[in-house]
Length: 120
Image 1 (cartoon, rainbow, N blue to C red):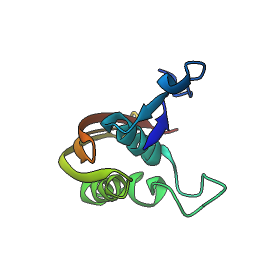
Image 2 (image 1 turned 120 degrees about the vertical axis):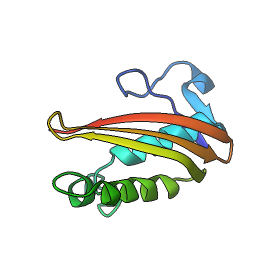
Image 3 (image 1 turned 135 degrees about the vertical axis):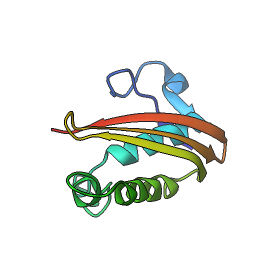
Image 4 (image 1 turned 60 degrees about the vertical axis):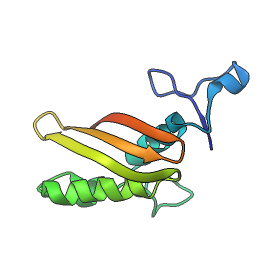
């Protein structure tokens, strides 16, 4: 599995050859998870059915069980993920921020992920 690394602004890195990639390690799977969670349904022109159901199941007056189930399913469908060992989320509706912490078993070992997702 190969994923191009991102800098602190979320932009792809270039100019360092293979050092610009996560190759066959848990960081590649972690970046795949983060990328998949950030993709909204209908956002990708090549497959408008792909994406995380932010407006359908997470934002608005949805229960914590529903949005956690949606996020877990999206993570478990990510290539390289075997299981989720620990999952916690903190939704702050006033600031429109969702923080997700999870410990994920991947085909390359464990990865500890913290994702912060904000919307306008």
